[in-house]
Image (cartoon, rainbow, N blue to C red):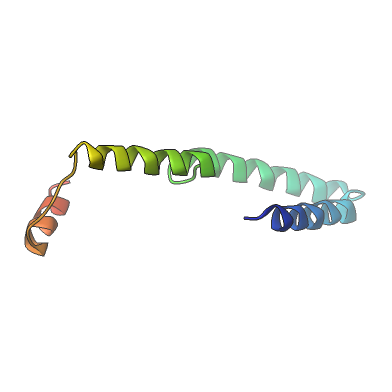
Length: 85
C-alpha cells in the first residue's frame, strides 16, 4: 500500500469516527470491533508486517543457497511428501 493510499484510508477512517463521535453507543460498538480486529490479527499467524515478509523471503533464499531444500522428481513424490506432513 502506498503512502497516498494509506493517507486516504486514514482520512476516511477519521471522518467516519468524527461522524459518530457524538453517539456513545456507536463509539462503544466501534471500540469493541477494533478490539476484535486486534485480537484476530494477534491470533492469525499468517498476518505479518512487510518487513517480516521480506525477512522470511531472505531467510528462504539463504536456505536455498545452502542447499537446505526439498526437491522432487515427479508430482507423485511431491504429493506423498505433502501427505506425510
